[in-house]
Amino acid sequence: MKRRLYLSLPILLIFNFACLEEAEDIQFDEPQINPLEGLQSISPQYFKIVRPDENEIPLAFSVQDDSGIEEIKIESHSGFDGHTHGRLAFANNFLLFNYFHVIEASELEDPTFFSTIEDDNLTIYLDERHDGLGEDDNILAGPYHFSITATDVDGNETSYRENTTYHTVIYIQRPYAPQIEINSDDLSRGEIRGRIFRNTAHELSSDIGFLWLFIEKKDPEKPNQEGEIMEEWIWGEANWPHQFRENSGKALPSSQEIDIKSLIESENISFDLAEDERMVFWIEDANGNITVEYIDN
Image (cartoon, rainbow, N blue to C red):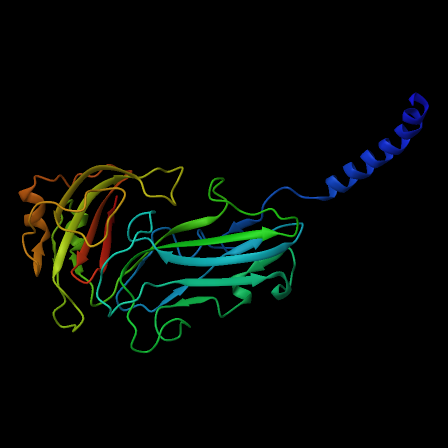
């Protein structure tokens, strides 16, 4: 038995060396998702607001992996309730928006590098140009989660935990959702004036039913994530349950139009924001549409 074991040792050593050589050929680093050359950030940027008159969201990014890119996935889905993805009762006039696009290795000119400038079709459309929307379909306005993930030929995949997947929130505003106007000249003087109102000129608009106003402390090390809520104020009753707040508060001043300066003064809310803070308005109507607007400092 000892002799047979001794004779097998060289074979085992050769096998181990072969495995080590094969392991050295495998890359364990996930693909890198970066801005295009010459740009500061990936598009859509973190917490991008899509204005009511915009129906396109251009995509601009690159992916690199020295071992070879296997797949790139671009995906967006509703984020109305934070991250619980619960359901809401809303009018049948609106659709939750979803987007899903996969780029396979066979589509790449360079197996180790992809850039959106090589693909002119990479634009997210919010009208009938999107496969899931008809000419008369209307998107439910509000926050939508957006992500880009990539996998290489060795099976390494970007991840949320390691912050190598690109992910953020897109706020889609629509003309039939609650509207908000803030005077930028006043902001430059350290004051805040404006109004929140129902767009009665649009046939699909409905009464304002809920307002969540909060001051958020941003984390510079996690610019793609919501910050810590320092203070908050809630009026009305929400359609959507949300993991980060109560779903009802005191009575709304009005379901048609709310003066922002009067609202803030009535609650003694300070507009003296710190450098790493921002003020966020989250407004819902009776149909479940949400408008989010924020003031950065």
